[in-house]
Length: 214
Image (cartoon, rainbow, N blue to C red; front, side, top):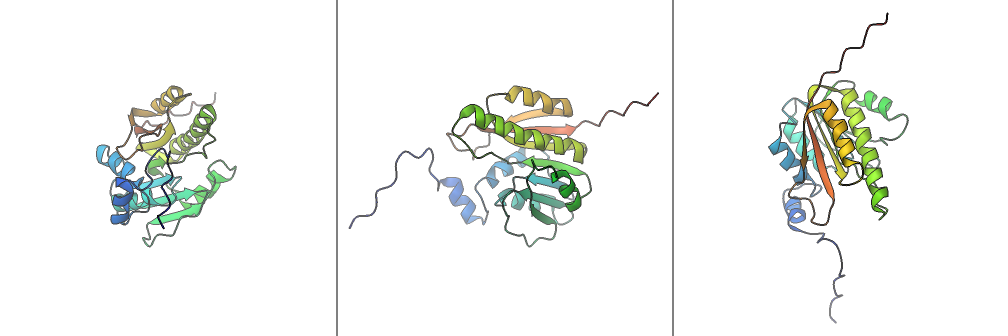
């Protein structure tokens, strides 16, 4: 009896080169190579730094970040689904919804210090409607930017995944208003049919001092 013929028409090969490489290197997701490339290009995660990973499941980014900051650093990973625990004590994870009203308070309870980098790999469940998916992607990226500006120290970095199109340029302008330099990166590990890119904000500007009340 012959085997079942392969299903045709998939937009990508699920077990491609990066999938196999991730498996060989003990990484939880092929997407880890996307962050690895970004970190090699930009000084985002340094030894002893504190990094927040939004949309962290299943933990591929966290593995890269844990090694990058070392045991003297701190890595916080959150997602709406559970993340398999890490053995490293400097890595903490939690099930949190970034769009929930109590998210900021719960994140503060996990770690109350300033971050050196906020990284978002969050992506919405795609509906197949381009404009809707772009809008949802930007909403998540917008929340990530809000958290980064509120919780990071001056000079810190920001990375967010989002879909090209829609109000992308408007969002890039928002990031530019907070960071001294902004780059658009499409890592090599990005699948061919994907419209996703990563927006990288470098060197968070110091907040302007509040004006004195007359």
